[in-house]
Structure formats: C-alpha cells, structure tokens
Length: 311
Ligand code: 13P
Ligand code: SF4
Image (cartoon, rainbow, N blue to C red):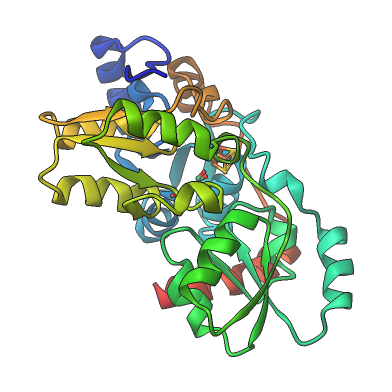
C-alpha cells in the first residue's frame, strides 16, 4: 500500500509557466482530465471529469483545443465542436475499456435484444455511439437512465457502471456489456479491507467503475468531480480514495489539511502518457488532430447531445 502521490514527470514550475505562455500565444484552450500527471494539470486552463471536459470544450469560443486525456475524450470534443481543431496530447493514449466494444459487436447484440434501448458510457468509440440511444458519464448515469422511456436497457461497455446504475434505478431492467476498466476492476474487496484495517478513521470514496463488492462498503460513490466535491464538503481529515491516483493532485490542493490514501497501483497507464514533453510538442505543432468522419459524427452527436440536455 502507498499513501504517497505518484508524481509523473518533473514538476518544474518554470516549464509550466513557459507552456502556459505558449498556450496563450497559440490561442489554445488546454483541457486535462484529473488522472493526468499533476504538472500537466497545472498547465491546463480547465481540469475536469469527462462530462465537464465535454461541456467546457463545447462552450468555449476558442479555435484550438489541446486535450490531455485519452482518445475517446478528444473524439467526443471533436464531435461536439467540429469547427474547432482538437489535438490529443499523446495519440497513443487510448482507453482499454473503450476498446472492449466494437460497432460490429454491438450491432449483433442489438439484433438479439429488440425493444431494448442502448445506453453507452462515453468511454467508447464514436462508431459505437452511433448505434446508441443515449450516452452517459459516471456523473450523470442516473438521470440519463431515468429519462429513457424503454424498460429494458442495454448498458455498454462497463459492467460495473451498469451494476451500480441497476441498484439506483431498480425500475429498469439492465442488461450489461462485459467490459471493464482494468485500473478500477483490479481492486478487490480484500485490498479495500486491508486499507480499512490500516486506516480505520478514513471515509471511503469510490468511482463507480469499481466492482460491486468494493462499492458495497464505500461511504460515497461518484464520478471524479463528485469525489472531489464530497471530500471538500466533509470535515473528516482522512480518506481512502478508490480511483486513479492523479485525482490526488486536486484533492490535496482543495483539502491541504487532509490525508488521502490510495490502493497501490491505481494508475491508468494511458492517462500517464500525457507528459509535459508531449504537451509542448502538441502546442508547438498543433498536432495530432483528432477528427471524426462527417457521417459518424452526425450519428454520434445525437446521443451525446441528448445526454448534455439532461445534464
Ligand atoms: P470520470 O467521468 O469520472 O471523469 O471518469 C472517466 C474515466 O475514464 C474513469 O476511469
Ligand atoms: Fe479508461 Fe480506466 Fe483509464 Fe479511465 S482509468 S481512461 S476507464 S482505462
């Protein structure tokens, strides 16, 4: 177990300032997910969860967005704002959960489930979104699910988010895809119990991508931004955080008086591919750009926009 934040890359203040100046010169908006290395979060104009990042991308008047996150996040931004240039800081940063579902696979499953609506987590490829009635993130899954008229809903691709939603919305019959996030799914009840014994005073906050048996004993379950809000609102000074360690940067800035314990290995290797060197290159070259074909974009936009209207 470790309670130390993992700092990836140099936390070099001069370099951070230089990159901020470069971003201003390029008139670019730098967006970063909470799981990115702390130094990259420091350069960003906005750090958020996947919902907040999409909303910020859509609302901003800028022409260039530099995205520090994973591919599906930049793709979603590009679908929402095709007139903007969306650059992914590291083109190798994908999401293994998003890769656990394909257009062909979902098309075949839909044939077996006539009458079921399809609710797709944003952690998915754009082509899969085109076959979906609505999209959701972990921040809005409950209101989005409740807004769907069909009783039977196929939730893709995360089985753990589906199980979490089923508990909160029992009136729906949820059938789930069998995808998962390797970073969150590896966490077991045994590991959590060990942390609870070690830190008996700590409150436990978990991301819904964790297994149901892990979520069962958490004090709070929510998206990354919801976890940050939760720890800010509590007076307790000790927390066990069951999500990616990058979030620790914001948690510690907001609650310098508190201690945050993370299970060992809660690291998304893809988010950590967003280094300061990559960010510099992206700002200098304004590439690689993430683009979606007009046909896919049109069809993927509808379920994303429906989600944003509910939120
Ligand atoms: P959030 O929507 O909470 O930011 O989560 C995104 C993600 O990829 C979690 O693994
Ligand atoms: Fe994908 Fe998991 Fe990484 Fe989130 S933490 S980007 S779901 S692999």
